[in-house]
Length: 453
Image (cartoon, rainbow, N blue to C red; front, side, top):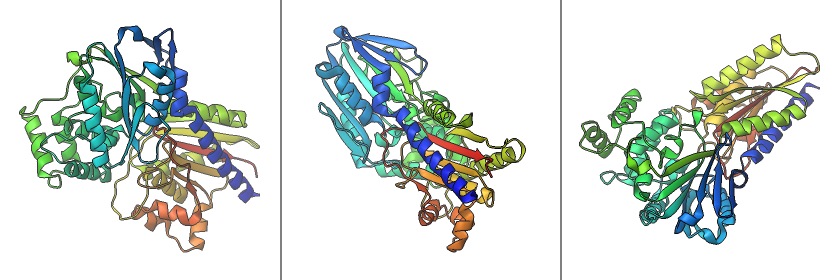
């Protein structure tokens, strides 16, 4: 009976995750939030605040964009605008594609930038530069945009910027820290795309993939005033003790920026932002609320614990499991089932040579903590469908995961130390796979608890 309960809990968790993804489908979000009536473009944010744009006032409507959700967003915009759309270019991660007609679709590498992304960034830059005062630029931004739009400062090569990104990722830097460096090593990020398009009007439709929906962090804030500085970059480098490991060009660039020899990114008093609107049309709370509604209809007493989970993935996994076990021991009532939801984005400090991502690492740490505990399941998954450099979104674990691994001579602790969670879960068939989802609103953790014996 216990195995049956564990199996249905795992099936439920996977089903809830996949159904939740439907609520943040990038195409549907644009169609739900954006309307065109009598040539008036109405854009609603996630709080139903509306901004309108009279297309009669613009000679051309240009679409640009970047991110894992950009192709779905672009397809919706094409259908909405039809012949009112003049031209456009977007870039997305390899495989995250939709069928487009007028907007040019380019694919590039992620999470490490590549030459394809740089070509895309150059093309988008030229298109924005071509915009005039009476034009409207619609910018479609979602998670992944930072890596997909690499346009390094003139004194830094693409390889040097990619290596810097790799060092920060492996050091466990948070997304805001990573993007702080990206903005100050770029010709397009940190509000600089708004500068390129000025004096055209710009409206950015944004799918948030960062905690607290910080606009200047999402996609490195290409149309948003930048609150960070070169001094912040130096502080991050010092925090992770990367000074001696960075390329000389990057170190020199940051040093020159701190001393004032290189201009700062545009700030909120810059006139280039006078005609810019940044509108968030979807975020992590959308999927959390959707899953809550789904689980409650299925009889689970559901609580959204938080939507700002961060820090080291394995530490988060342990804590989530401990909280679940404690709740089950103290509060679970007979014949009732419970669901606890978390959202956010953790990080991984890479010390090993294995393969995995933050969700799989979180799940592996959770599995170790849950060993031998019945009727608790933890799912951790990335809403984009790709966890780190893998083809999995994450993993699903319960109290039997470690016992099953012991039966085939796997040491969970060794796999965790080697950051090799993917190969651990692959051998147990516990990977969560969705394929590219064409969306991205950070990660979701689903904890299911049942007291049925």
